Image (cartoon, rainbow, N blue to C red; front, side, top):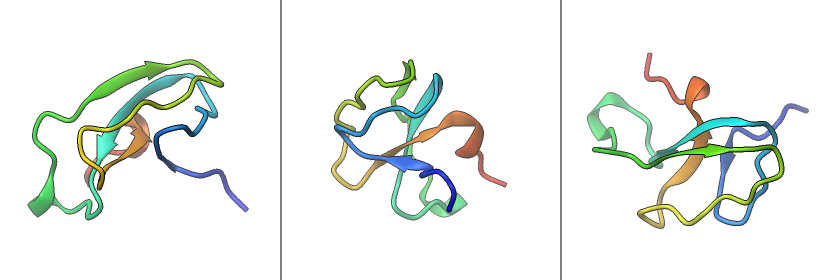
Amino acid sequence: MGEKTEYEKGDKAPNPGMYTEVGEARSFHTEIQNPKRIHMEKGDTFPETSNKNRKWKKVEKARVH
């Protein structure tokens, strides 16, 4: 089984890096305007997002194709 890719408030960061907010539906029609971006170290706790329907995702994995 693979590693989780989306995280909620209170989850621990599995790896260091930049994380950004993503919405529930990640299509080009529903892109988030000005999402929060945070730098996390391994083991840091994720803060609350701007909206209850958002989650945190590592920047490299959050790209829209």
